[in-house]
Length: 110
Image (cartoon, rainbow, N blue to C red; front, side, top):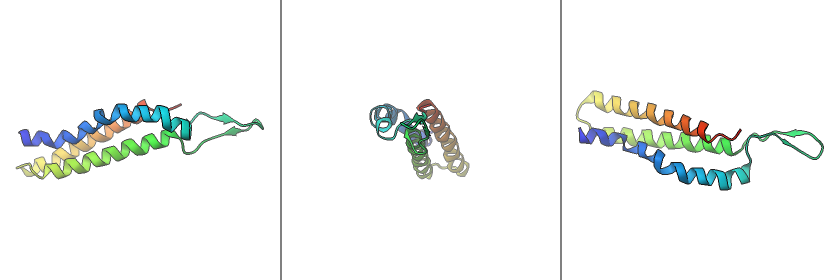
């Protein structure tokens, strides 16, 4: 059973990366790329930023989810039973993408 629990260890990437990325997002990414808030230029036209800090946040947390799923799938090869080798990466994938969705919406700049 202990070896089966190890399959979910990559999900620890989320709490480990949460605060460093949050600080990076607030201090660097929003300053560099801006938020999704519309900006009015000197002529009074609305400038919409298509690629902004929200885009980078979505790319980052989706990448973390993919990495966690791949590592979980590799670790699941250690499981004795075949159904565990299939079920654990699927459960880890559901958890990883669910957490990524929550983190993306939590850090979304409106």
